[in-house]
Image 1 (tube, rainbow, N blue to C red):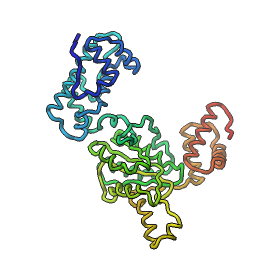
Image 2 (cartoon, rainbow, N blue to C red):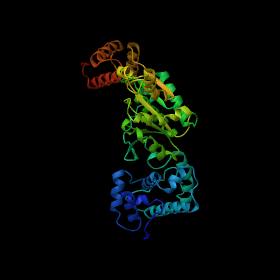
Image 3 (cartoon, one colour):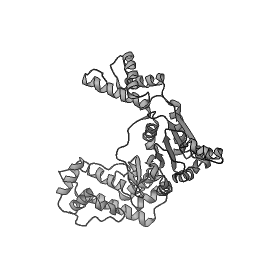
Image 4 (cartoon, rainbow, N blue to C red):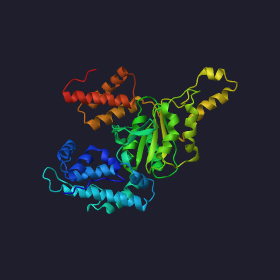
Length: 386
């Protein structure tokens, strides 16, 4: 049994992880109970190598950051990283005959031969394409305390889940494809009535293009002044990031107006960096205006133009129009078909209209809430009453 401690140089961050700490102790001849416990906790007693390789893959370190920037690691950095991998693989080999668990197999992009240098070569290409650390597996982040924090639960909505509004979705998707493909793109303003699917469309596009390298950074309007900091944080990341500001509205004298204008200049110049700003709003004119603004201004035309200039800086503006009766019932019918509801469609349409009356209007959101209600009632065998 090897008694030499596994002390990585580049992958030092792994030493803080309880699974890796238990692994190194067991591999060096120490007590194995902690390792058993950690593996059982993760359901990985038959996948020790997979668990270890996943820790390595998601570790943020000098090697992964360098490769993600598209740079070639120095010979010293490469050798140290490959030696760390070899040390981990040797440690795993020490436990190969333990009947309490199975080594399993390594995951891509690690080499099946468990050779440190061959695996390092594969990881150079992987990090350059997929980023590093949490960016590899997380879809969304928030900005907090000067850093990007992963979001654990992202809406699983798909483009197919969103009914009608086909032209609006096409415009948004085309623009995002340009963004991902390194072509000129535009920052986007999605505006329209509440419940028409603006935010859901953004999340659906994230889910559609995640494997293409798209991520979202959700930004509250209170943090708009942080856009330059966010650009700095992701400047050398190979992935593409939507900075998403939901339900945006600002006052005329809000200092965030000028900051957002500056951040949006890329839409005018056709910028092709890795940041796209997408905002949703219930109104076309994000900066609130009032009749008193016009009455008290010496040049009311200039005042109005200034208030509209922020919206105009978005290169692509997409209107999600209000839902009329025909569209509302079309959405209800499509959602009912998706759920395979048994209720007669004519009766369902009448109930849907009543639902809209009771709930305060027609919209895709109201349609989905109605279908969810009917689906639950059918599954319970209950009457559809509200």
